[in-house]
Length: 175
Length: 175
DNA sequence: CCTCATAAGTCTTATTTCAAGACTAATAAA
DNA sequence: TTTATTAGTCTTGAAATAAGACTTATGAGG
Image (tube, rainbow over all chains, first blue to last red; front, top):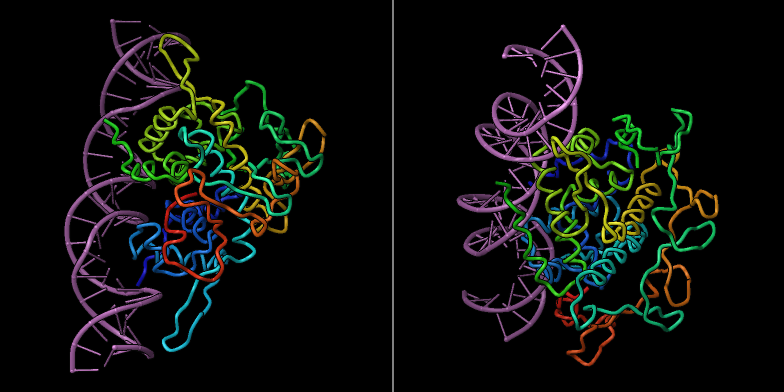
């Protein structure tokens, strides 16, 4: 039997990033999903593309299916064979994935330019991804973002605290 | 001596995601960086915030410094003590991080709403992050994106191939 | 001087995860 | 009957992580 990840301590935390990491925070899931976005769907194809241990691949696919990120669907009978496809929830990881890809492009591409180029079919241009504010549409700079707790326990203190580090301010594990 | 990660096989690959994962693809780096974005800067604060093993924290911080994602700067003399601050390269990971956070918010927040709320100081509104096309500004849907190799080896075949799976099409490990 | 406290690690041991690759099951095709 | 496909499962050893005691450098208080 495949042993499940023990790393779900994270999923208990009241932190959206920790919960996301409990799903795709291991060493392979995002690479598997990248392949899925490239239309890779079958076990053998994932394996030869990624050179991942079969055992780990099987476990990771099962986990992503259990989390609803991938769907396991039969593509033939006799013998029944399944393929893995992105669900809406899986597709919703695209911004995170493309942000990492473009970060890698920016800081690690060699003189030949980035290994792959993305084109937006709707407008016909090659593009980079730009993270914007849903309210005003402006590109986001982390220095312009304030955060505060969502479920008000403490009366909504804005976190960009001054230098007074109460040693617990950011300790709440909220993100 | 701290053993370095052995996982740099990835960094050899001609794949921007793999290179990004070689830097922040382990179980802790993104959580450490989240804290850094929340103005956590000192070893003890990272440790108590994340409940990470000190050994792993030390190794991860050293790695992030070596990669230029964090800078290690003295904040006092006698004894010399250092803190860790995001560099530009580290700040550039914000889109990826916030995309994961908002994905977690969307799919895992309970009835109380997301654990933290982001406000864009420039416009004064709470927001979600929206990934847009740098060329036309429209929100990106993965189904509208075509990709092709950047360093033209093969004459630029667009990858959203039809159902003809050549079993090697996406195998090139390019992303 | 002596003891305690702080901050930033380093080290040890046990557990968990991953890598590599042989082996199995179900079925079709030769 | 033998071989080929596809999607796994299993075994073994290596690497990474968890938990927490120990170390170093220094200042503070008595």
